[in-house]
Length: 135
Figure 1: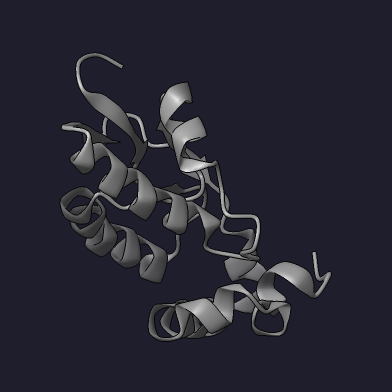
Figure 2 (figure 1 turned 45 degrees about the vertical axis):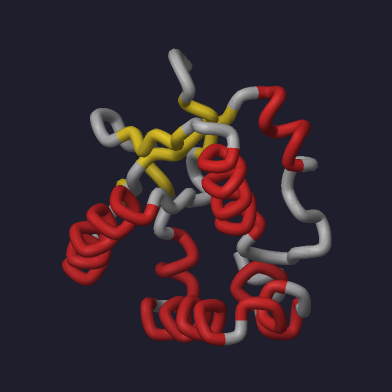
């Protein structure tokens, strides 16, 4: 990474998107780029920055990628740096959770996380998509 880029992420691409998945990705890309959000399938940063931030928050059972991205963005700004959102070659991520649970259940979790982030990310009972053992 050249210059004052401290880290960043890539936009999303699903392996087998249905129509809803395609719409979700199309709507999320501008939001990811403008707000400099980090999605769990691809995050990068300089080693010294990762150490300074203390890595990922191990008290969180979900959303640790977003938490890290928010801290990275604040740290970069405080140190006259910036984050990059890579668009040219997005990593391909699986929609296996969607196939197992459906969009409705996944969206309920996302909205719950947006509205009650602290409670949701720190208690496995709200995160059955990750911890119920269904595969």
